[in-house]
Image 1 (cartoon, rainbow, N blue to C red):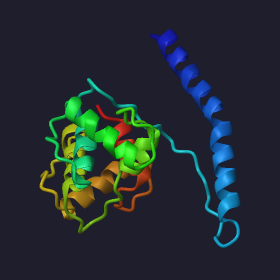
Image 2: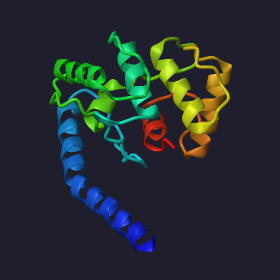
Image 3: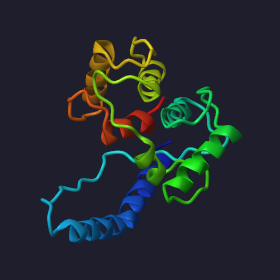
Image 4: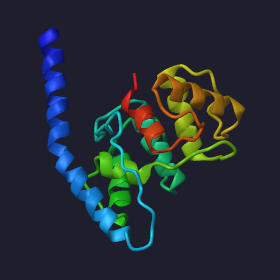
Length: 183
């Protein structure tokens, strides 16, 4: 068991080292492109990475993907099973956003797929958030598509649990923690 943990830690460390130059090059290019008329943006590395989800996957990550796609007009049943219909919707989503249409939801697709959520919002994306909070993390909230007080309180507790800024807004880092730490 200890050997497995050491191998996993070494793999993660290798991934961080391997991707660091790409992140720095991307950040540098972005800074150069906007330097003429914008204030610099602080680029920080996320504490967790985006999960890779594709055909055959099951669970709340898939439910989140399906609800986020529904929020963008795709007709899917959010059942938590990554079937051909989900693959086709992901491929279409990727194609119209200039991504490689491989049907696999990785970092690039996640960052374009998520929808920033806050109190007072309604819809399919909120249902995806609520479903994940309820069924992956045990928060006793309704899955009704309304980001009200109960959902807001659950988000604050979730953010505290994962060391995120407690602002009640479901932004990139909160979505990332939500789908990366699914149990």
